[in-house]
Length: 61
Image (cartoon, rainbow, N blue to C red; front, side, top):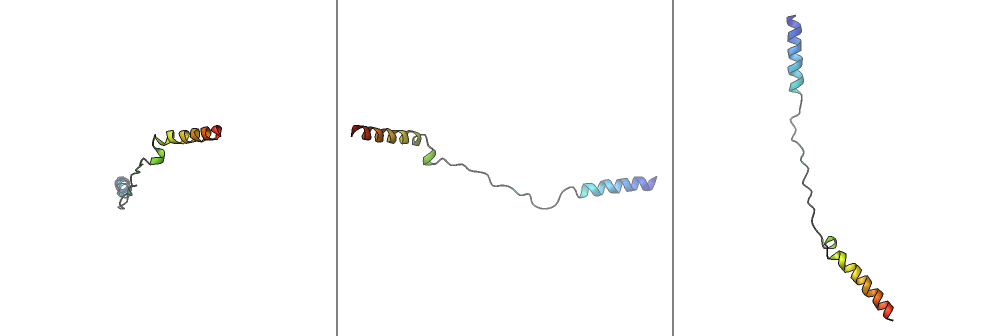
């Protein structure tokens, strides 16, 4: 009975000893999203205005 308890205690302590490793955790760098000129709100207005100006220029000929 003593050997069974000793074996159970040793196996329990051995399994917790190797639960993790000693390597440094790898941290992912944070993702930084920057606003560019193409994705600004004014760019959504400029393209239709240019197209409208082209249509007016073609229609006036």
